[in-house]
Amino acid sequence: MRIVVGGAGIGGLATALSLHAAGITDVTVYEAVEEIRPLGVGIDLLPYAVRELTELGLYDDVAEISVATTESVHHDRFGKRVRSEPRGLAAGYAWPQFSVHRGELQMLLLRAQLAWLGAESLRTGLRLSGYAQTADGVTVEFTDPAGNTVTDEADVLIAADGIDSAGRALMYPSEGPPTPHARVLWRGVSPAPALLTGHTRIVAGDGDQTFVAHPLRAAEGERPALLNWLAERPHPGPPTEPRDWQRPAELDTILAHFADWEFDWLDVPALIANADVAYEYPVVHRAPLPSWSDGRVTLLGDAAHATFPTGTEGASRAILDARVLAHALATHPDPLDALAHYEEVRRPATTTPSPTPDTDANSLNNRASYSTTTP
Image: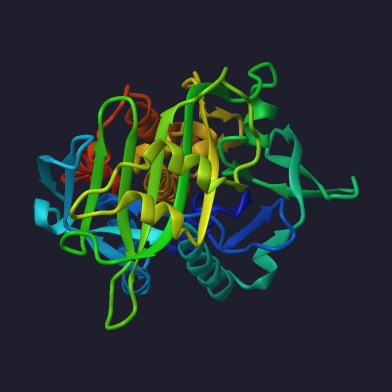
């Protein structure tokens, strides 16, 4: 079976690795950018995603670049502890919850793909721009920055190209861009002293403004910890439609809204001011789709079911999508049946309103149908 994947983000790379683990090795991943670089900030890998990466044999590699989260502690606007919840192994799961830099995880998955599937399995500088189906396959079109087109033939096309998905736009041309929200979100990474236990994710706020932080690197000797942080508040003006996901943030603007958030256990203004990188993220929304598939073409990850950045779920859900889809393709002789099974399993789990971070994890504890064993 020949598979083409559009998008070399975490979802697309996890898909290639999951297909390889399931015995499907004729896979090519296409990426729009010329050079894949470790961009972004921190993300959470929830226990069910760590399980899938463990099944791929990547646990030790992921653990080496991550910090295990053992608790999530909620505070009010003045830093007073309201409640705490155990996470990962501390909550009784068989796998930890990890905090990791998105770019480092992406590069780890990329190295694994190139090692397992070969350099020819990745083509960069080519953006998905069209597809045409026949009775037994799909012709996929990609466009380079100069406007030249390249085509490929596949049994299945998987569009894993993010919330601004070209594959989704081709499938639903009248949908339009994501809908902007009346919130502004800043995200950054800063060196800082260890946060509480060193394995704590904190959420502080008053219902209007929210600040979240968790470690990406532990403090060691003279070296400080590295904290990922997120600051959110109402947008000062009408919702806009920003399309730049790496837009540098103005630290003075953020500080103006969090200047007095100094707690005895965390100095929020100092954390913001010391940022190595900080970005202003568009807060946008995608309505659930009636279907993720069009014949032999399907969507995966944020292209299918985008989540808010504050929900900790986006990368984890994409990794789970990848494993379920790979298993379906490996166990169903007819690709159309495989895509129908994938959607039957994953779409209901990702369209429930405001799921908790462990929604998918709870459903996985006894899931025979999600077996990740190579058929």
